[in-house]
Structures are given as structure tokens and as C-alpha cells.
Length: 261
Image 1 (cartoon, helix red, strand yellow):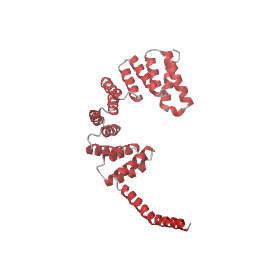
Image 2 (cartoon, rainbow, N blue to C red):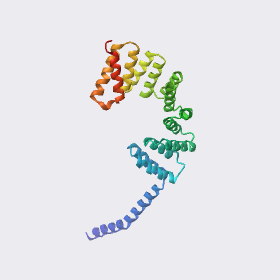
Image 3 (spheres, rainbow, N blue to C red):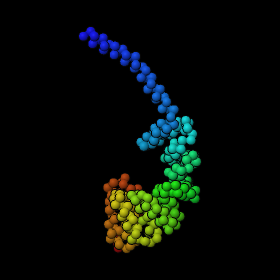
Image 4 (spheres, one colour):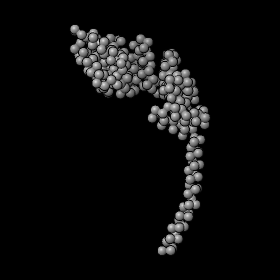
């Protein structure tokens, strides 16, 4: 019994000697991690996932102080600046990111988005085209289609949006935009089919439902158009957060036009 007690005492004494060493090793490891720009960047990524933009920027500043050429940190910083409405700062950050890593497709696409936000459309299109040239980036193709549509170039818009869909066939935004382009080209059957495809992916998307109703109105199928508009308005009344006041106004105006038909 005495022997066993002595062994336990010895084990505790050894543990007491080793424990400070283990704690010190952990502290050293933690201190080393803090000096790693990738570790600071990864902490920023987690913060962005939870919407903690200011906290993310703090870690990104730390990452860039350790490595000013960390392209991913610069890109994420650009996204954080965009979320805060700091568009000129975001442009600078994205430009720095792609100058360090010219092959970073998503960085060029993000730069295009910031430039488009600043209404520098020709520069935005050039950035999107670089992104698409690198790896057929479907977001870049969609963005090029959107610019072409807004500039009333439906033929080019259709070409780009179909390239986007060919790369990723589950985008509600792309199918909705394709429907708008077909409408601009007065190809109403194809527009309706495109909106219907978008609704197969996301049945509750009220903006797409409204656009489908508009197409049926243009096809003079007033009964079906009225049914769709009424359904959208009922959902907006039941759940005001499902859509914007602007959408509600458009639906109400459409129903007024249909009165008496």
C-alpha cells in the first residue's frame, strides 16, 4: 500500500513539473499563430460568415501588416469594404489583389462588381471579361449579360446569360435575366419558359412570379396574368417581408390595368 501511494505521489510530482512546460508550449504555439497572416485571414473569413464585418476588417489589417501581398486577404477586405458601402476603398483593395494574383478569376469579378457600383461600366465590363477568360466564370458572364441588358443590347445580353447558364444551370438570377432579355426581344414564349425554369429552382421567388405574370399579360392571357398577380399580392399581404414595397406597387398597378378585362 505504501509502495502504491509513493508511486501515485511520484506521478503527481512529475505531472506538476511537466504542466508548466506544456502551458508554455501552448502559449508559444498561440503566439506563433498570431504571427501567421493566413491564420489572421482565416479568422476574418469566419467573422464574415457571421456578418461581423468590423471584426473581420481588424483581422484582415493584421494579416496585411504581416504580409502586404496576401491576395486573398486583399480580396476579402474589398468584400468587407463593399458591405460597408466603401466603394472606392473596395476598388483599391480588389485592384491590389488581382495585381498580385492576375489568375484569380473571382477577384477580377469582384473588381468588376465594385466598378459597376461606381458606375464605371466600361471598366467593370473589362474586369468581368478577364474573369470569364480565365475560367469561364459564370458570375462574370451573368454580370456582363446584366450590363448589356441595361445598355439595351439584348442580343449580347442573351449570349452572355446563356454562357452563364451553361456553366451553372441552377441560377435563379440567370434564368430570370434570360426571361427579361427574351421579353426585350419579344420572344414571349421563351421568356415564360425561362421564368418557369427559375421557379422550378425557387418556387417562392415573388419577383420571378411577377415577371411571369407580365409575360402572360403581353401574350394577352389576361386571366392567367390576373391569377398570378393576385397570388403574389396575397403573399405580400400575408408576409410583408417576402417582397419590397416597390414590388407591391407594381403588382397593384398591374391588377388595376386588368380591371374590366
